[in-house]
View 1 (cartoon, rainbow over the protein chains, first blue to last red):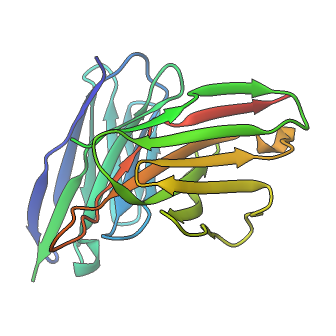
View 2: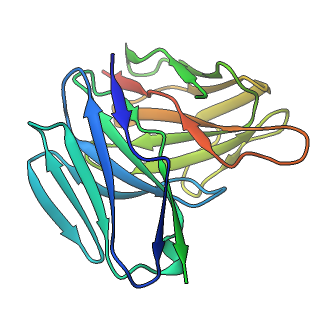
Length: 109
Length: 120
């Protein structure tokens, strides 16, 4: 079956760095997405990786290793507004999005 | 966990025809469902928010007469693309927000697998 695993919840301190991991097993691979979702709001796109390596975008970076079925989202200089859920999603060979359950990130002062 | 299904998963139609996409919450009641559209390698674009028993709220730039949304029950919302044209070809994804009932409302959205529409 197809499966996306990410931690349910993580806690970090304002100003620190946090890494959210995502492992996947899917039938085919057409890219991996990270989304941010604040409570009660629609998810917002953060990153897309289809090739191995690190993609940096401001305070956020996303890494992909296709051979390991692994990705992580790295958030630097954490701010209180970064408190949200972070969704990992993989597009499989049928271009269907397979979603992780999301990681709730709690930022403490 | 909560499961949301979409049907069909993929559809090809001729220009000018209408296509209906169903979104179902399988094991929970969803007072609110969201319809998104996604182009390749781009973010999800929220099209509309659908509340059970009331009219959908459309985002700016989304034609409500072209994208008809019906949310007749707590487990089903439908999106009908009327008089489809090739530019409507896209990936449509719904999500459902669970209503826990009683004391609080779950904010978690559960997403369907998406429907790929190709208009020829």
